[in-house]
Length: 299
Image (tube, rainbow, N blue to C red; front, side, top):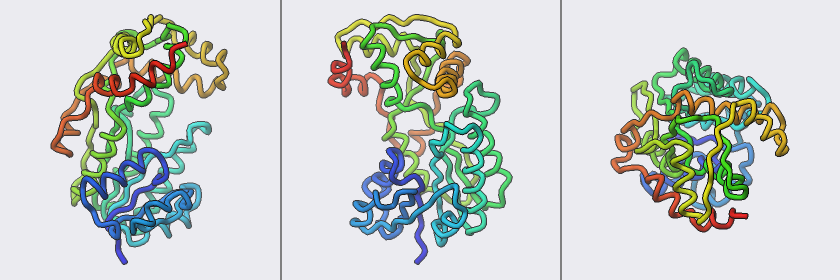
């Protein structure tokens, strides 16, 4: 039986929410959906709802051919393989080739804002994947350039609330964060709307913030003042290494601040509303909703 929609990374946080919105928000029949994961045993709750589940591994071409068979619209959620530089691009190119071979009618891919010439160390993975999609014989595709999630702020907020200091190499650069669940809702809408077009959407929040502005809002919610301390990128790297991160991973994380400082995450678009018909949740509302979590991080 041909299924209309296939979602890779279905056991991950974003994949789970995309599937939720396909079923609940877009009212897609479960029988029209395939949830694919390296760990299909984790998809039992979806299978119980009537969703087809399949194993897919981007390092295993045979698994991709089997998983993509009969799927009309396939969402490739970018993998989390960041510990081996360049390997994620190899995985993504293999997935694009498998989709092409399987006769997929519309491919969707989760990318990042402004991947070309970005100082972010893993940006070439996204730039290269976009290039592979554009060069493919796929009849239609959608690239979803997702801004950073609100939830990513937690990685900075924990140490900042514990110490009272947020070390930043981003200067006055801003980020137009967006809720992960809002990203998932927009992706589900794009899957359902997908036709014969070739389009790029950049999904952002409605406002952008500097690290100082974020710290001020989080301080108010947590009841503890956070001082943003400007440091050079190398200082940021060494601080993370000192905290126990492997240096290659620390350099990847530090390059995020470099990208923010260059304005790579500041651009605001109306693409989320264009896809969903609603406004994204505000950063202020999210911070308020997380006040308990922030308070628990205070040393």
